[in-house]
Image (cartoon, rainbow, N blue to C red; front, side, top):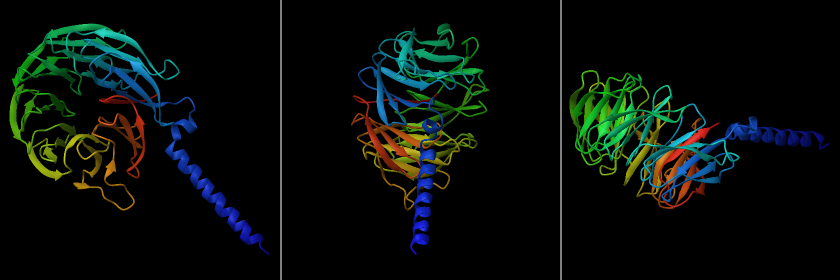
Length: 382
C-alpha cells in the first residue's frame, strides 16, 4: 500500500540528487570535466614572494620567491606564464605555472634598469613593454627569447608603458615631466610628446587607438589626448582625486573611481562630457568590470567590503537573495574575475587574505591566507 508513496519519495530524492550534481558541475566544471585543467591565482606580497592559490580546491598550494619591491604582475594573454616586476631589483621576472607540480617557479629574470614599475603586452602577445624610471628608458622584450630587443630615451621618470590596441604605438607616462610620450612600437622612436596633468600615473586608450585618457592621482583633472594628431584635446574636471579608471569594452564610457568623492563618475569618451555620478561608500578605491560592461565591483578600503554595481542602470545591486554589502576582509584593494566570471577575487591588504566571492550570489565563499600585505593579483587558466 505504501509502495507508490515510497516511489514518489525515491523519485524526489533522485531529482534532488541530479539537481545537486548539475549545480556541482556548473560550479566546478574545469576540475570535474578536465582533470588536467588548472585554475590558479597569483598574489604578490610585501616580502617579495608570490603566493599560488588553487581556485578549485580553494587553498594556497605554493609560494615563489621572485624578488624585492614587486609590482606590475600580469598573466600572459596566451602563454602559460606570469610576468611581473621587481622594482628594487630592476628586472622583469617570469613564472611558469606548470613547473613544480603547478606550484610554479621562476624561469627567467630579465634586467631592465633602475626602478621599473609596470609592464604591458603588445596586442599579439609577442612583446613586453616596460620602463626604467631611474634612467628614463623605454624597453621592449621579446617574449619567446626573453631578450631585450630595444631601448629608447623617454621623458623624466617614465612610470608606465602602454601599447595601443592597433599595435602601432607605445604610450609612455612620464610622471616627473608631466607628459605623455608617443613612441613608434616597431622602433621605439619618439613621435611626439604632449603635456598633460601634473604627475600622471595611468592611461586608458580607446579601442580604435584614437584617444588616450591620462590620470593623475594627485589632481582633480584628467587629460584627453588625440593620438593621431599628437595634441591635447582638453582637461576634464573630476569630482575628486581619482584612484582608478575602467574603460567600457566598447570604449563608449570611462568610469573614474574617487575615494575623495566617495564614488565614481561616468565620462562619455566621444563627447568628453562628465556624466552620471554615483556614491558608493566611504573609500572606493579599485574596480573591475565584466566583459560585457554591465557589472562592476568596487573595493571599499575603509569599509572592508566590495560593492556590486549595475553599471548600465547606475545602481548598487541590492536584489533580494544577493549579498550586500559583500565582506572582503581588511582593506580590500585589487580585484579580478576568474576567466569565466564565476568568481570574484579580492586582495585584502590589511588582513593578508584573498577573498573569494561567488558572482552569481554575491556571497563570500572563503578567505584564503596569502601572506604579509598582499598587493597585486593575476589569474591563469591552463
